Length: 269
Image: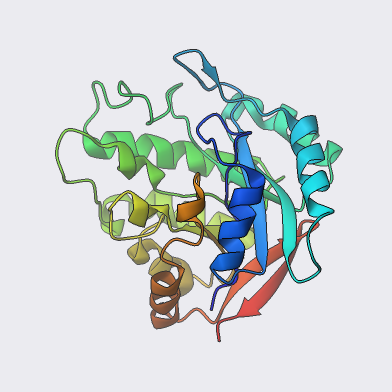
């Protein structure tokens, strides 16, 4: 059983209203022993007047305060989700080294100055062109930025294709850029996130797809973090049992947990 959810959001993120205590209660009820809060720090995100920047100091203070009331059988990690862009590498590098985070997710939310969350992202682009733009920028970011622990929701862009129902893609469509991303992660000893929110978005797959996860395994990748990307208590640990079965079928033997930025492999039972 996967007992660690390393991607969760609270009211410190612009797109969540969840309290920390409610998220922890949900995690406990689902049998988890470890949870990371990883609220958004998206410096350039500003949609309809909503800022994506995180109040880092108060965020860390809130986690520290709620941690003092927890029993020893539950491990609460201080994490953060960086919205990576090419021109933000240095300020994010400085932030990562300034604070004692347990865990950092690197997520490419922007390509060519737009987030796929914005309705205009695909204007003038085909589906595959829009997908490739995110993959291309993701590759640049993993090649040139090192202050992170796992690559978040690699193919999350597919959530936001709106012109028809054909959101899914095949690995073969993007094999060159995807292989370059995966081999870079492996070479740098960085983890790949299995983000189960794809099931919340009714995609019948995590991010990235099982096809990409199979390729990661073929290339020798072993470091997998598991995260629900929950923004509400009811979505904590979404579809973990189903994902675990698929990962075992692919050939993975363990998943990865972090503490003070140090990885530890946890075997699937």
